[in-house]
Image 1 (cartoon, helix red, strand yellow):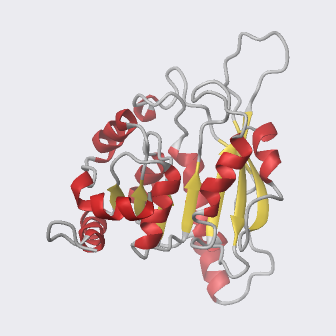
Image 2: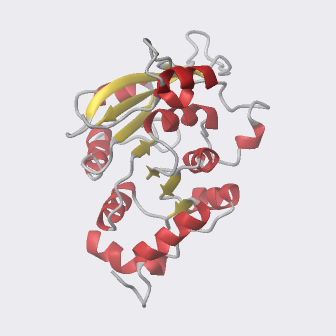
Image 3: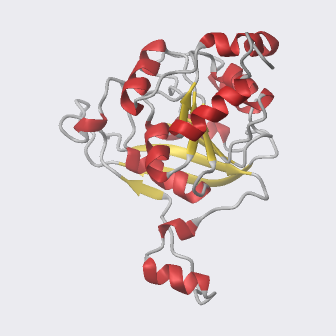
Length: 263
């Protein structure tokens, strides 16, 4: 496990304890997934928000197979899994994500403010598929007000309130959410990710995002007091994450030996 006298697991553990969030050096998502599995991490929740096979990121004919290969590297090592995309993209995955993950819910992020030059139907949504193991717990109580919490603890609540499967938050464009527009071409609002993190985890749980983009998952985890491991292939985006979260990536030399084992 040690490289040049440094134990990678101990190094990352120390960063998680100190900063709450760790960002790995640039690497492919499936390599990152194998790496954290090899190090013994089992995230409570994994967020996967890849490019959507059109526009930014380009197009590849084997997109479905490619994403499924990535998921297969973490499917038996996480309790909750969220997959983002446009509705017509994620619909292809509903019954194809590998066990022991099972389909839980189709979530919709609805935004009213999407500008468009198209004279026709204007897109105003993205989709997110929620998968979980049969034993995975959800936490609707994270959304309770004080009175609801008391009733819940007294087992005096017949119906459990919680967030709907439609998340209404404005698209980060123009002057909307200017503070969260940090250079990534398609950032998501922190308020959108907050609901997913709250429903699937409790404080100090480990969250993992292998395609971290501009670091929204990490920002939300810091706010909600979760631990988080981020990875991203793009060095440009990692620089955005480092600046946003005020942390430095794990030095590549710490992981070189491990990366050779999982390549």
